[in-house]
Each structure stands twice: as C-alpha cells, then as structure tokens.
Amino acid sequence: MVTLGPKVLLVDDEQSILRSLSRMFRMNGIDVATADSGTMAMDIIRKEPIDLVISDHMMPEMSGLDLMVQIRDTYPEIIRIMLTASFERQVMQKAINQGEIYRFFVKPWNEDELLDAVRSGIKHKSDTVGEKNRIVDELTRSNIETVMALAEAIELKDTYTKGHCSRVRDYSVRMARAVGLPSGLLIHLVYGALLHDCGKIGVAESILLKSGKLDESERKAIEYHSILGFELTNSVSHLKTASLFIRQHHERWDGTGYPDGLCQDEAHICSRIISIADTFDAMTSDRPYRKGMAIDKARQILIENKGAQFDPELVDLFVSILDKKGVAGMLENSYADDAPTMPVILFVDDELPVLKSMYRIMTAENYTVKTASSADEALEILDRQNVDLVVSDQRMPGGTGVQLLRTVKLKYPGTVRIMRFGYADLNETMAAINEAGVYKVLMKPWNDGELKVTIKNALEWQHMSRTCISDISHV
Ligand SMILES: [Fe+2]
Image (cartoon, rainbow, N blue to C red):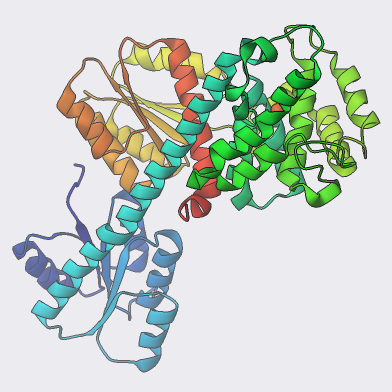
C-alpha cells in the first residue's frame, strides 16, 4: 500500500518505547513506521517515503548517532530527531554537528514538546526542501524548454540550418567536458550554444538566405546578429551569462573578429568553444548556396586556422575528440562522459503486449530497458537499481500510475516521470502534473516517434538539471 501522508519512523531497540511512541503519534493523526535497529531503519527508508526519523542513541549494531549521519548523507531531506536515555554532552554535540539533527530530547519525553517538534519538523521539510525542489525543478524545466523552443524557432527562419543549434550544443558540450569546464558553467554554455544565432531573428530573410555574394551593407546587417542576440538575451536573468557568449561567438583568436575585435582569451572560453562548434557544423552542413563539406576537409580547415580564427588548444582538443569518436559519436549522447552506462528506462503497464512493444522500440535506441506490470514490481526495481526515467500507465491493479509516480517523486526525485493515459481525464491529468510532478503526459495510442523524442528530451533535461541544479537555484 502506498503511503501518501507524512510519515515518521521511530527507531529504538526497546519494543515498549516503540509501542508507546506509536500510540501517541497515531492518536494525533501522524502515521508511523517502526524499526528496532539502525539497519532496519535504513531498509525502511530505502523502501518507503519517510519525512522524519526519531531515533534512540544506544542500540546494538549501529548507534543512533551513526544512523543520523548515514541518513544525513543519503537522505538529507529527512528531518532527524534524537531521543536518548541519558543526556551525554558529547553525543548531543556530535548529533548536532555531524548528524545535523533538528531536535534533541532526553527520555522520559514530554508528549506535547515532542509532538510540537515533529509537527514543526514536518512543516519545515515541506516549506523548505520540498518547496525549493519544486521551484528549482520547475525553473530548470521551463528555462530549458523555453530555450529549446526558441532555438527551434530560429531554425524555422532559416530552414537550411535545421538541427544546427542542437549540433552546436552537442559539439560544445563535448569540448566543455573534455576541457574540464566547471559544471556550473555548463548550463550557460548550453543556452549560449542553442541561442548563438538568435539575433538572426532581426536579419531580413532576403539577406540571410541570399545565395550570391553579400555587399558591404548586407554583410554588416548579418554581422549585427551578434549584438542583437546579446541585446535580446541580456535582459533575461537566466540568459545573462549566455548573452556574453552569444555576443562573442564571431570573435577570432587573432583579434580580427566582430563585434568587439577581442583577441585570444579576451573572449570567454565558452565563446571560443561555440565558435569552433558553430564553424565546424556550418562547414559540414548543406547551405542554400553549397553542399556540406567533407569531414576531413573541415577538420583540415580548423587546423589551418589555429591561432588565426580559433583558439589553438581548443582546436587540438576538438580534433582529438573528432578522431576518436567521429561526428556521429560526438553528437550522440554528449552528456554521457560522466555517466558510463546508458540511461535506464522503466516501463510500467499491466498489458504485456504494450511492455513488449516498448522494450523492442527503446532497446533499439540503445537504452537499457526494464519493465514492470504493477506499481509494486516497479518499486522493487527502483529499490534495487538506479533508474533515470519511468514511463507509467495510469490504470493498473494494486495502485494507479499517479500514486506510483508520486512515490517515485518523493523517494527518487532525480528520476524523470512520464505518465501515459488510455483516455483523457482532466482530474487525473491534473493530479499527475501537480502531485506526481510528471515531465510529460502522453495519451494512448502513442506515436513511436513522439515517445522517442519525449524520452530523449526528458533525459537531456534530467542530465542538465542534475549537472546544473545548484547553479539554476541561484537564478
Ligand atoms: Fe552566428
């Protein structure tokens, strides 16, 4: 049975204490679970969402203090209260400093005080951690989705560069990872790479798509896209850093670029990365006035322009990744350098043919695919291994998809959730969005292509959120 209300875990090796505390909390409408050891407590925490733990200190195997430290390290959002038989200054000090506990009580406890502490602890958790996570989650998703939509809109204006922005992003991320760029900068590089040409929105299509030679005023009109892109993005708070890269993506290492004539590392490293990625993709893609160049030739041009147009070290880096992975390898799963295994997707549906079909489609896309025919089976899989994304059906025996995904959200907030409905029910759809925080809702019958794109985007969003979560939270 999936628990939906706040839940307190009581840990004590004395059964009489567990019974007495359980009775008190239940009489006051607070759901409890009990454990007679630290090991058992950790088992429970791994299996079900727990909001607050009250633990004794002196217990066999694992002390309460060790348990608190372990919970702080693995589930920091769980509020921790210690309830010990004797007041030991050292234990209290360690509990506060190492276990970062919320409150410390000595037995025999005062019922009202303990109840107040638990209620305020639960409120504190939902007010702070829960709210912060929700806001960060929503901000990250909406920011990335907005930028992606904008990048696609820019490509619509110039149909010959379809896919250009996302390829520039993938090449750039590859280089950034290889160069060891701080993870906090990565999201800004992604924004900058996706939007590097957003200023083209203000350039006439007759000039943008012109196949012949440009005259002086037309050339200036095109060059103005760097400044216009900067101006468009600089006033948007989460694009402020990226606006600099957008302005500088046509600067050159030798100082002859535009708009500011910056030389060498006067231009930001992200701008220098985007410049190489942009030029390489522009050379190798078909344009209105010519076919895409062969990879080897474009590679050679990059090398010949080391120290002139491009940062020589970054060109060497780009060429070494290109030689190792090829273009397809550079564009495929560019976020995977710190994730050695392929993303794991879990499909939950009580219809076997659906599971078989999902398995076949997504293993062909090189994902690791797990299947479960019920919510319980899905939770067992999630307990055993890391899952990046769950796609669940709504109607299943033993619990709905919304209930399952809500539990997943509480226990594994980093796992992306997608909900599939066989029919359109507004209330259930709202619950999926509001309670289970799903990334997307899909209606049956689904389109295989839509499902693949949704999953790819969801995983990309998850990766960027994980990498940049601390950064985004400051936006
Ligand atoms: Fe450009």
